[in-house]
Image (cartoon, one colour):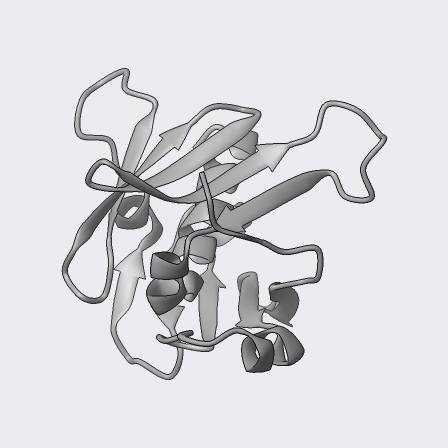
Length: 156
């Protein structure tokens, strides 16, 4: 995939609250945002977890609409490794998921690739490559990428 590969932080995770349940804020890095043209959408997303870190819901920016985590990483067929999410625009995107690589698809076009490195020769453990088209929904893409990684790690 031809696109933009970033070696600087694009998103920053921070703890927003721990009581009564865990809340994590995902924010676009301000320096990165200023250097990349065409970035649109919310600056932040919030992961509100249920009791004992169970799946809860996601909220984008200051929007009062909440989306169940399961809705942002849903299967269309039993046993499928693909997961789907609906963007705030109403458009449906698909993640092709494997433990070492994930691809976000807009129809037949790949708009984001996450790859884990198998060796320690790289400065980072993984790389995200975003197509220019992905800049219009980068926060939603990164939110669902992290959510899918959580689903894999926790077995939700």
